[in-house]
Length: 295
Image 1 (spheres, rainbow, N blue to C red):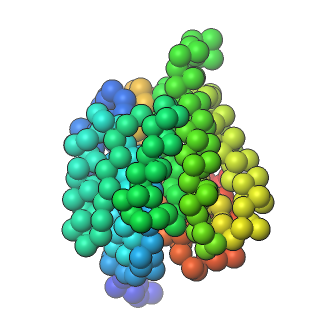
Image 2: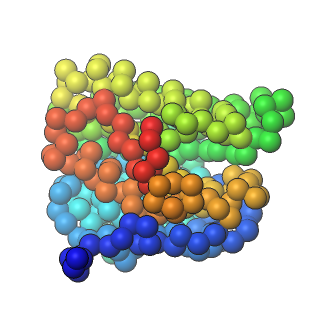
């Protein structure tokens, strides 16, 4: 059987070999992640499905956030990118990639665990972009938990504040600026449905975000605002070597039916679809991008 020239075997499109042992401190940086994740820098095609849309992406410096920023820019959207100050080097690269696509990129450094920063950040994005059409709530924090008893209040509060409190603060501030046809897209996780003991607090927050998506979609539907989630499986981002895994890291993602971890660029299309008119009747949905793992 002849394979069309644009069609690739998903099992070997990206590396299915073991990842080298490595360790980073949070939040993790792209240049220290080996092999470097594919955010779509050279692989995402240019289109116009999001022409003129104005987007705010949290965690937009690297990983899934960078891939979404690149994809959105090449589809015609201007973006505001939220990130931690210590992620400035990654954020600058993302900004340059967005600008290379001919679109605006508004940098929004700061810690979203601060409610005041969240409110100010949305205001700046709206002011700089001239409005807001799509909100991507993507930023998250996770850390390996060897045992439940060792989980400290300081650590799980960091997870809860980053992953749950911040989306509420940002969403509450952003919704009044969203017109009919706008959308909110939340990064959940396969962990919401198949929680790992060593990510217990992270998995809890991702399960809560699934409920957040479904409840908010019901409330905002009457205003013409769609709310959806993307549930990635094992995706190779700087967050992974910064999680604190040792033996698990080298075989990361090889337990999926496709036999490998996914790349950020392979998730971005889900966000483009949910933000576009192609998904105009899709709301309250959780779209899995898991390499074949079921939710």
